[in-house]
Length: 207
Figure: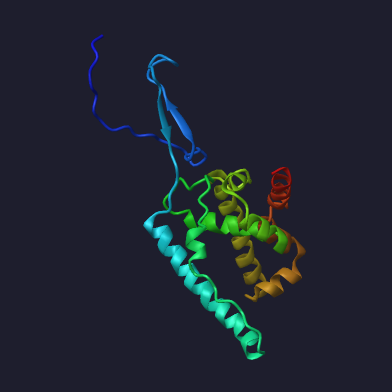
């Protein structure tokens, strides 16, 4: 063939489990046919929106810090000012499963919150200080996991509504206390076991 120049745009279709931030080698035709191979180094940087969210959280936490340390100041103890820039400067953007739909963002957040609730205060501090490569090794929820969670939540909610109709009482706490079976179903919709906390212990111990 005759050498030439090709201009265009390459597009890559990745599912939610594909690793984005890493080194890629682009092969034309068969393996090793094109030389030298084209190597792509992809890194994730915070978007403007993510930076805005970090600044918002920094302001909120800073105000909470000032409120919480006001008592120390009243008691004559000097407390350092909160560094509001520390959150934005320490943003962690690991490669974790992403949603494949346009309406599951809230369910992904809920699924991740349920995992964090497994952790003790010490475990939460360990996760907060963990490097990106360690965070990526943890069993974060995938799109399939979130879809299963949605089914469980819907069934548990339907059971709650049915129980409320049966006894003419919409107090969830009362309904759960009166029915061990209902309580077990709701718990199963929110709890899959301590796998996440155990994975964090294993990964952090091996690091």
